[in-house]
Amino acid sequence: MLQAIRDRAHGIFSWVLLIIIGVPFALWGIQNYLDTGQESPLAVVGKRKLYERDVNRAYEQSLQSMPSLAQFDEKEIKRQSLERLIREELIAEATDAHQLRVSDDGVRDFLQGLPYFQTDGAFDREKYRQLLASQNLSPAEYAEQVRRAMAMEQYQRGITDSALVPEAQVESLYRLRNQQRSIDYVVIPSLKSEQPVTESDISAYYETHRADFREPETVSIDYLLLTLDELAGSVNPNESELRSFYEEQKGAFTTEERRRVSHILIAAEEGNADADKAALAKIQAIRERLANGETFAKLAKEQSEDTVSAAKGGDLGVLAKGTIDPALEKAAKALAKGQVSDPVRTPFGYHLIQTTELEPGSTKSFEQAKPELVKMFQRNAADSRFYELGQKLTELSFEHPDTLEPAAKMLGKSAQTSAPFTRETGEGLTAKPAVRDAAFSEDVLNGKNSDLIELSPEEVAVIRVRDHRPAADRALEAVRAQVIERIRHERSVALTQQRAADTVKALDGGATLTDQAKALRVQVQSPAPFRRDSDALPEPLVTAVFGAGRPKDAQHINGLVAIDDGSQAVYQLKSVVDGKSGEGDQELGRLREYLNNYAGQRQFTAWVDQLRREADVEITRSEQP
Image 1 (cartoon, one colour):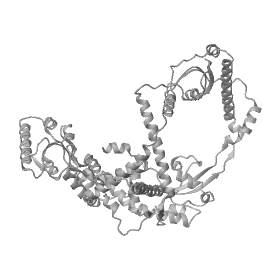
Image 2 (cartoon, helix red, strand yellow):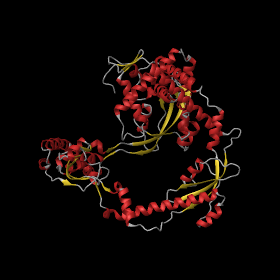
Image 3 (cartoon, rainbow, N blue to C red):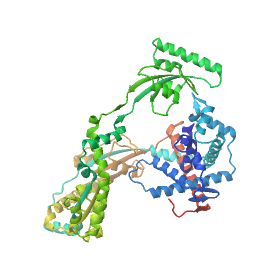
Image 4 (cartoon, rainbow, N blue to C red):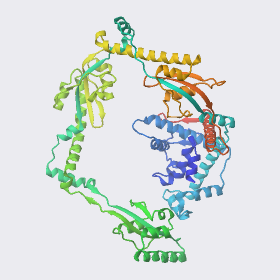
C-alpha cells in the first residue's frame, strides 16, 4: 500500500503524505513538527505558523533527494523549502475549506495496511502502540495526522484525475511515435579541392578571420602554496608520543565483530497462556529436529511464521546493534558459529537463533598500527599549525601587497613560478579555476598580491602576477600553415556540399539515385523502415528524414544533410507509414496514462500557483533562509 501511495502522489503534495506516514520511524518525530515552543515563526500562513525547524526538516529532505551535493546553494534550497511549506499549508487550508474528511474506517484500513505495523502480514496492535509511544505520540494524534494527509491526497486527486486528454491527441501522438519511414540514400565522402591556395587567398582569409588567430591574454604568476600534507611531513613524533596517541585512538584500530544470524519464529500472542504453551511446544519440537540433523534453513522455510525471512532460510542479515529485539540480540551474541540458541521469548512469539557467519572483532597492536598511527599523529599535529600559518600568510601578503618575500620568509620557502596560462586553461596549480580567477582579477593584474585562495580544506595559496601579456594579433607568417589548412578545409566542405546539392537537383529533375550513385562511385543504401528513435543510422540523417514532409502521388522527397565526419548524405524519402494501434495495445494505454497524468499535474500546479498568488502569507522574520 505504501508503494501505491508513492506511485500516486505527485508534485508539491507527495512529500507531505509520505513524511507524515514515515515520521515515526525516522530520527525525529511528528511531535517536533507540532511542538514549536516559544520560537518566533519565519512565516504565517492563515492560522498556521512556520518555524525554522520546519524549514530545516524540509531542507534536509531536499538534500536527501539531490543526486549530488557537489554544488548546491544552501540559501536557495532553504528558500524553496519555505515556499514548499507555505504551498503545502495552502493545500491543507483548501482541503479544510471544502470540508473533506476521511472516515474512521478509511484511516483504520490504511494504517492496518502499512507494513510498519504488521507482523507476519497481519496488523500488530501492540507494535503500533510501541512505535508511536517511542515518538511520544498517541494513536489518536497519529491517526489525525494521517486523516489530514489522506484528505489532502483526496483533494489533489480530485483535480489531477479530472484531467483527460482527448483520445484524438493520444492517437495522434501514438501515430507519430511509432511512425516508420523508408529511404534510399548515398553518402558522398568529403571531397578534396584541387584549387591552389594563392597568397592573395591567404591574405584575404587572414584579414577576414584575424580574430581567430589572436594570441590569447596570458599571465604567469609567482605563488606560495601551503598544504597540510607538507606540514604533516615535517612532524616527527617520538615513541612515547605515539604510544599515548595509540591509547587515545585505539578505537580507530578496532574492528567490530561481524555476525550474521538466522531465526525461526513461532508466533504467540502475549497474555494467552494456551497459545504461549502451544508455540513453545512447537519451537521445542523444531529444536529437536535440528538436533537430529535437519538443517536450519530447511526448517526455517517450512516452519517459520516470519514469511519474509523464511523465504531466505531464516536469514536476518548481518546483526547490527538495535535492529532486532534486545532478547534476540543478547542470545545471538552468545552463540558460536553454527550454534542454535534455546527458545527465546519476545513480544512476537518464540524464536530459535543461529549464527551462520562469525568474524570476531580485533584490535591492531601498537606495532601493527604504527605506520597508520604516524600519519594520523602528523596530520593532527599539523592541523593547528596549518591554520596559524594560513592566518600569517594572509596578514603578510596584505601588509606587503607588492611582494611575497616576507610571506615566503615566514614559511621558510621560496615562491614558485608558473608557466603562462589563459583565463580558460592552465596546468598544475593554474588548472584550478580559483587560481585563474584570482590571477586575472583587477587588483592582481595591477600588481597586488591576491587574497588567500582556499583550494581545498587542506591547501591554500597566495599569488601575484609575474608577467602579463594582453591578447594580441599573431603575425600572418606565424599562422600561415593554419590559414592554409582552414582554407582547404572550407573549400572541401563547400565542394562536398555543392556535389550533394547537384545530386539532389538531378534527382528532382528525374534522375535515379542508382545512376547518380554510379557517377559518384558510391553505393545506394536501402535500410529497413525505421522510427525516429532509431540508432541504426547516423543521427543527423534520421533527424533530417523525419523533418521532411510526406511524399505525395508516389513522388519521392529528395534531401541532403551533413554527417558529422564531413561527408554529405543524399536521401530519397520513399514512404511514410504511421503507427497503428490495435485493440488492447499496451503502449497506447501507457501513453494515454502518461498524457493524462501530465495534464493532471499541470492542472494541479496551476491551481496551487493561483492559491499562492491569492494567499494571505506573512513572512515575519527578516533573516529568512
